[in-house]
Length: 348
Image (tube, rainbow, N blue to C red):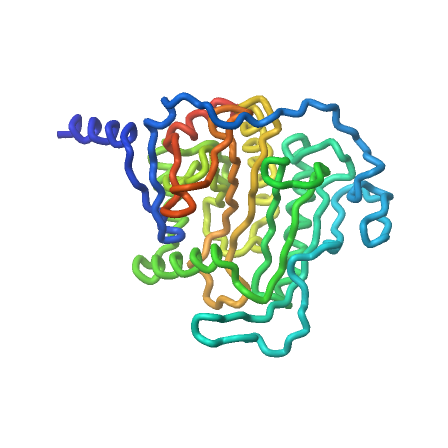
């Protein structure tokens, strides 16, 4: 009987199937047979140009002038400044609802947007920085959250790395958007984690980590405090989820040791990405944690999503078009295959 179950599971992994994402209550189509199809689509260009340690034309480099004519200090570690072209601002509207006529609804918003430069050096990425330098970035994230949490309901920390992800400046940096509203993806995760907690009296992502540690099929790397997995329900080819092994609803609750180990595992993950296709891997990443207006938020678990776009090589990316836009997400390699490939490049 056991051999039949194993055989069926192996067949399951090699044939088209759907997987459920309990975090957002959505499904993803997995089509592993599509990796055999010949590729005659677009090949991305790889730029091997030498990077400058300091770029006089970069508005993020130390001592340079930004678009608003402000001069950057000659910073030595991280540097935070107000986004000169913020997507979210305080509109000054006193009423939250501008229009509420049933089908047509609109609401006033307010918030602030900032940019965090990871390093004064123009040529570095997080994977090339030391553990201590990455820890400085983590401490900056936490200090920004501490400042914003008394004014807004949500703070989104995210990084778009590389031209493929729409990054307009190669200087190592991320963005922080604080808002008085809860964004869609965070709202989905809040609803699902709360439902799971009310039904099971346990935390969804804590239980999920236990299952991944037991099976080891999708674990990319781990240390005492943190784990990186290609989630069972991953959409992007080499998508990963970075989580603490114990329940932490907020970023501000992690200990000094957890901060140190987070820097360590972040570097290890990003190096494995770079080694996978022998390129500085492009990606979008962001942190999710309990919104500030949520009381009794113990059902939440802190986590970071990493979404690299590359599929087959440094020049072939995954496109989210057609079926993905009109029906549901679809992926071409299984999460188990992706995790196995990434594990090959993890520093032992």
